[in-house]
Image 1 (cartoon, rainbow, N blue to C red):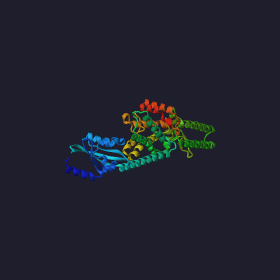
Image 2: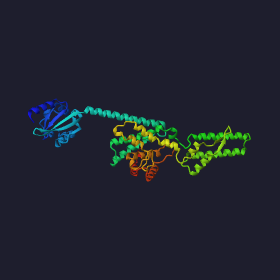
Image 3: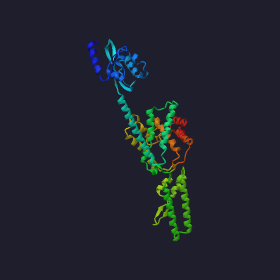
Image 4: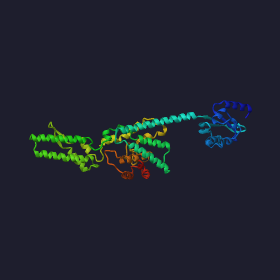
Length: 429
């Protein structure tokens, strides 16, 4: 390099705000400006005209900085541009490093390395990210609290699922299972669980907490039967019906009410039960105006004809719609990139591998691993819960038996279910 050109380059370098080092093809530092000396916390006389190995090789804590420079020297055609940590007496710094080739520099192909101290910017970015995450987490806590506050019967469901989900992922990591999640996916997965039932805010409590087929409608039936008994007692006293007819009517209604109360809470209604309910729906009585009215309303007949569970078809549709609302709510939120799968994972937790789930009827490979795990957790927690008024407590072993049958039917993932059973994370609760 000619001296005039070299002097000009060196003057420019010395005045630059960025740290700059010129290194020849043998790895010797020929020029270092004051900014580089300050950033690296090294006097120029300890660096200039010395090889990089002499200066940095013994600094194990700065291996990445040293390796980045050496990579640029050994592969000069591959431009280096990266963020690296650097530790000096002043503490940890984050440097942005770039490299470029200088042909003919000191009779060899040399290298110019520039670096800027981005520590403050990086710290601000980290702080900003932490603030965003805390805002996201507080929002999630608020949503969960809102769902829990509506119903005392659902208050522990989400929290139990989060706890089991966290322990299951921890178990996968401890057993070095290939399915283990990295931190970002783990956080997104747990957030999906936390928000999976947010759509229940749209479900009427009369549906979400319906304890029996009739719920409060049973009281209406009892009041109506009592009213009919009184009306017929009056008719008997007025001579419009015999005492025998009155007694027969009271006995029929007592038997009918006993039967209705049994159907109201039984686990399964047979076809014979449903046929008898329909016959009861055709029974009429004379009200105080002399009009013939049904002993059971159409709504009550519909409720008593529920084969299994406590919800009518319309009520079940309202309940199932909570996953659609969950997706709609979460799709309105601008999640950070690392959480962009949360709406999908949370909104698909009722999909089954055999296509018989809802709301979209997805099947097979359309349902990802994360959703398959959430589905197993959701089913297990729901059927082992002790605080649901509409179902009896089911032991963990009974719940696993139910899940086994679902796996046999192709509803849930057999491999993941076996891992869940092996982990026994529910015992940590």
